[in-house]
Image 1: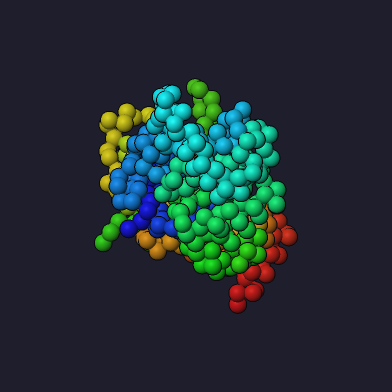
Image 2: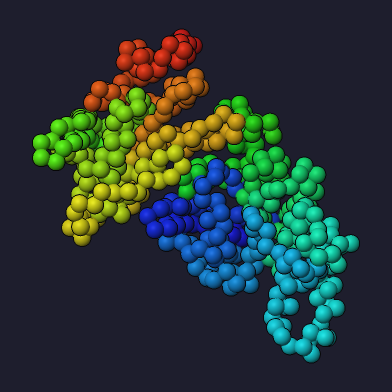
Length: 247
Length: 215
């Protein structure tokens, strides 16, 4: 059974059809890349997976359970975490606090002060683990706004990881990163690979082709091609292009 | 026998100017039948009526006379929002869904099919660098192999655009001079004097080179 599956997802905004019919089935532990030209519908597809957009037709299944149309927080609670193309951190808070706010048990606690006093150290430990996973353990006390761009990207992933998700959705994780940052991120994703089911939209083809188990190409709101990086590179036109270099 | 996938049954579109005395400013006529699944290349100079032709084929612009039949159904008699279940029109990356609504939708028929049989791609954005072109061409083949009719319109401005047309299209429609001519293959297209005039000398040489290399 697939960890996350989309079947016949169709999205229409007014008169505009954004997703015509998208199918995707990602196995547990798979890293699945999503690529396609601008405006192809990639981010909208992520918004369907994470509950921000309700499809007009089609289904989303998480571990076989139908989660279509559930609100984002319910879907997050069921184990889909995501990062955004545009970063969404609390700039004035420390890196560790950002991660702590991502912990489900921290959010469940609400404003109970007595439990806050008793539980914070335990949350801090968990947050430190997530920071360690992304290589930020020694920067936990720095305010998010004072971190470098690459560190902020890593922190976003730490926030997502803190939720102990079953599926991690990354929307253009390398955008805005320099080559050092991309390499660090690639190393981070390589460490997570296999332990977590990952779906990543990405324009950096070197990143995607070197890390993904399979890739779906979305265009015209449809999956126009799908396969392992090796399979996709068998096409003559692909070999003639820049993509051919990443074989 | 199943109905042909796309029939342009003696269609004619006339644009006029003037409110009282109408002068025709543009006329496009076509009468042809594309019976089988396949990939059809469409070429022709700007202003020849390619866009009008596509709009008629996909139900967004009704012909002045004649009928457009998709698998036997008159697409202009189908509810507007269901026309893309018969024929779908993409301009570059986006689906075109602008319909000139002259009849209330309630008076129109539902689409007999759920997924489109005719897929029309008007100037898809190809470039050589990103490799998507290979995926797009394979997608056209997949649609054809699933029994669909794929119509691909291109403006050849680089020699590799001609490579794409020669590789992918099983036949061609050449739109010029108010009419639509059906052309069997790339070799015949390259020999067509009006197509050569439209391409210009440099691209004509490229087209000839493709014909030579394939012999």
